[in-house]
Image (cartoon, rainbow, N blue to C red; front, side, top):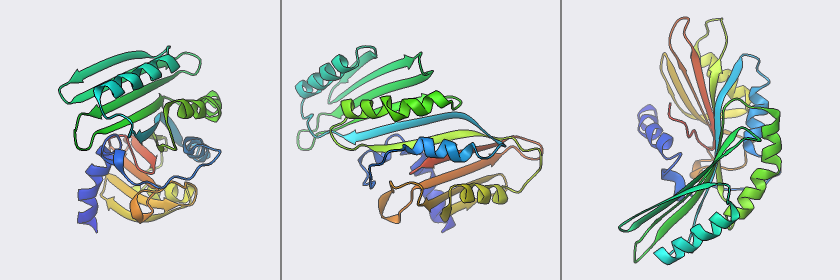
Length: 249
C-alpha cells in the first residue's frame, strides 16, 4: 500500500491542474461551496493560519472542433468578461487563451483559461475558471455565495468539476508528532483515512468524508491532507484539498 501511494502521490499533485481534466469525478449540486465549508472548519482551530487558497472549476468542451470554433468561443467570453485582460497563443495544432482579472473589490485574482488541440479524429478542449486568494476574509464568503455562481453559469455549459485547496501553517509552540496532528485534522473534517504516506517530517493522507459530496474515481476519495515540518522548533505547514490537493507540497 505504501509503495502504491508513493507512486500515486506525485501524480495526483500534478493532475490538480492537468491530469484529472478529463476524469470521472462525481458531482452533486449544493448551496454552500466546499471552500466555505473548509475555511469554517479550519477557523475552529485557533492554531491554524490560512496563507493562501484556490478554487478552480473545469469542464471538457465538446463544441470546439476547429480554430474557427475556438475564435468564436474566445469572442463570446471576451464580451461576457470585458474587464478581464486576454492573451491568445496559437501554435500548430494547439490553441490557448488566458484572461486574468485582479478584483480590487474582493482582493481576489480570477482567471479563465481555454485550451484546445487540433486533433482531426478527436479534438480535445477544456475550459478552466480559477479564483485565488491569500488570507480568508468574510467578504470572500459573499463572493462565493453570488458572484462565483454567476461566473460558473456564464462560463460553463453544464456542472463543472470544482477543486478547492487551502495552504497554511499551524502555529503551535508545543512539539507534537505529525501523526497526531494529521489525526486531529482528519477528525476536524470527520474523515476516514484510505491511503497514506507517513514519514518523520512529512505525512500525506487521502481520505473520505461525508462533508464533501464530490468524489474522485471509484474509490470515493474526496479529501486529501498533507503536513510537513521543518523539524524541532520549525514551522509546520499544512495543505488540504477536495477532492484532491492542487498545491505542490
